[in-house]
Image 1 (tube, rainbow, N blue to C red):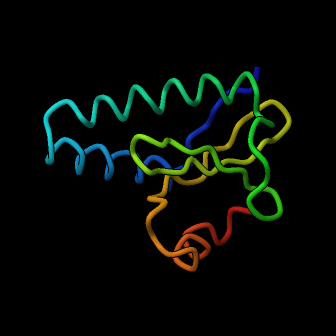
Image 2: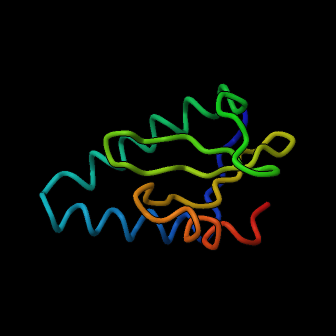
Length: 101
């Protein structure tokens, strides 16, 4: 099993998304947190489940929230780079992922 590691940018994304969802509906942020935890458990068991999005970044989709978990597989760790809104422009996504390849 690969140990998931949230990089600082992904942590910031998590808290921003959590607060936004909670402000829309009580409990929705917690549902997002649970979905993320479930996804990270799955990815830690099957890190190559998703194909590459670029050179080394992979993307796992949280369909319920229209979010992408962008991650890299390194030796025995799963580096979670960003958690991004999939409704933003592809150009913005590329900018948000700069420096993580």
